[in-house]
Image 1 (cartoon, one colour):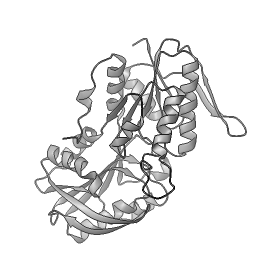
Image 2 (cartoon, rainbow, N blue to C red):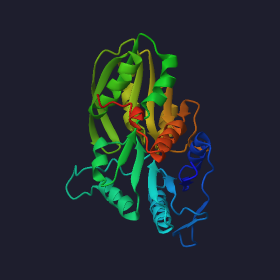
Image 3 (cartoon, rainbow, N blue to C red):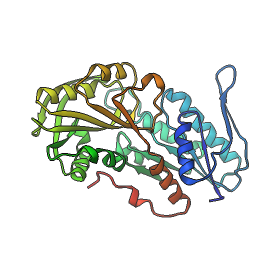
Length: 316
């Protein structure tokens, strides 16, 4: 492990430190700040020549600053003669812009993939991409992990014979099916119509949810409008209790206020792929750590071992 080095930008230093604790190695010494006019400043303060380097950086709020930090750190490490540079991106921002769904719009997820490759990344390690096909945007290896086991270990404490796993839309059915299989629960799907990027209208529920303990599963929560619509639909269908497990807690805009006002949502469970600042903390928001999942993947990649055992996902 003496060839392994881990660095981080300013997006999620707490997670980076937890990963280093799992691996029992120190966090690399790097200066990542800004010049007076706002330009990103990076300096690697230790020798990385010939090292296997991992840069942990979620492209979360503010996404443009975090992305630039990651790109510039990769460039600095490449110019410092690191032998391999893996960009560890627990939350891959711009993932929702993965296709041309309207005229004259970009495919920004592909642009970000190109930027990371040109900057000098040798491979990508990420988790619960909004769209799995984003892996194909890269011309370098991509290891795509899933947080399902982190959530399952927590949800088993609440598992009942009346549990039902709910997909909030058609796109999350495979994920919901995997949760239902592991929990031995029923499966339901909410059919909805999206009126705008931030507003949805629930149509109807496919599956039996009356009198059941519902668990909504999804990969991302931004403003929370989709989640609240789903909770309200399930409550109208007379669910006994409603929880939600969502991998990436972006929680932008009025999300926390909406969760606070939605008393029918018993609990929202997210991971620490994105840090939860004090102003967004709430008694009904629970954060689970992915440090061991990411740490194990880093260790196996460094040792040139298979990480297929970590791909316990919803592909089947």
